[in-house]
Length: 244
Image 1 (cartoon, rainbow, N blue to C red):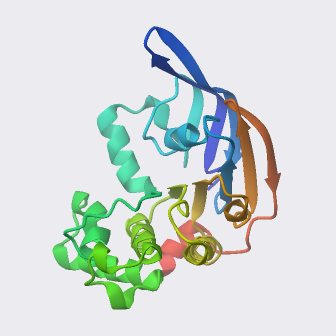
Image 2: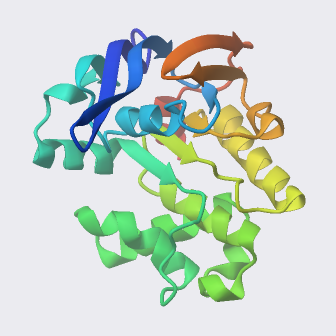
């Protein structure tokens, strides 16, 4: 695509606490290139999770410009925004958010229930996504039968199954031991480098942030700096989708 995948210009966000208006983001502006793996860091209350939610279309900015894949998501009504999220965003959460009564394959299938795919097609896609994250032999296991690292890999497969434009991860290693966290970070790096997925990850862990090739720091709702390395040499997300 021409231009950045994500474009923010002078974005502001506040929340109301009683009669008081509390500013969270103040004039944020930056671009995220297609194929970038960006880590958002900052102290608690710095606005990093709020920023992630704005980019993902979970929350709305008060003012400014915010476009993802050429779509001005601030102009979408709630129904259109929900449809846009389903088609474009893959979510990875700190606490997995898996349904305990469903097995791994059924959990991964959940986002596909909103599509027109047949049951057979949904099953095939879920199995493919689980194979991508190394869980082909755990498809019939329920979350309680999986380790924390395996549950997070199921959550990553669920984020991948719709072939999203953008993957957003909110503290994806925050509830994992070091070994499991490193395995999840290596998986995210592989998805970025080999499949071309664009990833935006919120983390408080410097070791986790170093898995990305760009680190952005927020403090008191303002951008304090961005350290960037080169984008990985990989196929574009569109090319990866066609090859699959």
